[in-house]
Length: 246
Image (cartoon, rainbow, N blue to C red):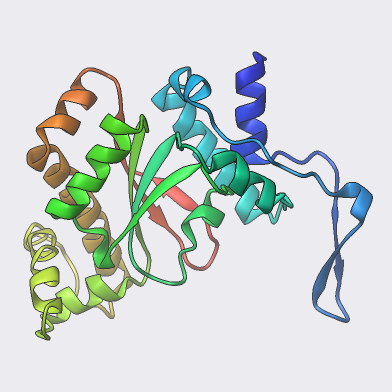
């Protein structure tokens, strides 16, 4: 494996071949021997970023999520990473996620300082500010993948289905309504109590946001058409921590 690929995998995925974590069932804690700690201080440079393909990055995100769901722990030297990243940033991807506190985006992909741009807004919707942020991440700072990540049991999706009216939340939820309207042919109860319907709306909303990104940003649309970036959807599963790419 080429050196930059080796370092990138070590950085993003934190692949640990040793069993460094030991559970103490009586205390409910995790014990780590000092000599087994792997300190990750590597930060993606512009040169490394330029050599990564969108497909490679998506594969790295999937592997990182596998680490997360299997409790493979990397102890990072955070203070050193802060210093290493202080003068610039070259993240590989940008994740557009919901606001939900139960979705810790960097942890979900086993990532750390300098790995990812993260944009968060209730319902993982798109607006002009989000579009500007995505353009900055990709066109200016070189990120090569946009992941629109929804999740199970989304409060914004539930509220949109309920047609909640409350302050500025009303305008936000209006951006999810087209996803609901697209499911007129859904067979079954169209209620947030129906998990199948909730998932269908969640998926439709993810695809709606992707379509809105392409329609709303000529810059990102052109970059995708030229193969410079990929825009993909994903769903985070609350019970397992697994991310399914759609």
